[in-house]
Length: 143
Image (cartoon, rainbow, N blue to C red; front, side, top):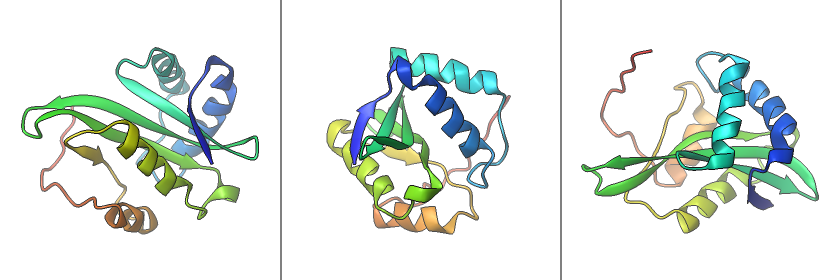
């Protein structure tokens, strides 16, 4: 698998894949298309978040998004795995693991964070094999 940063020419492919992701059981709810379009523009800038495209034999097979934040508690600039999507036909081939390995190697951080839908036992098993464990905090939001 080839992993590369997203480019402007990836816009429609990304929007299609992210629409599929947000209509899947991997998330709590769908989001407005405008949010995904705005995110794409941010990825091209790359200051707060980066999106990576996964390719296999010249075909786009998925994407992964990371975001950056600073945590005094963790000791510095941290990485959050925000989204990971692999097209159905390419799942269970190790692309998710390869993405994590790529980020661990190229974006060293004192802490890596991710969120998971509780019913997504398959993803949770992968994350636990990679060394992730529950943080113990309850996340709260205000929208």
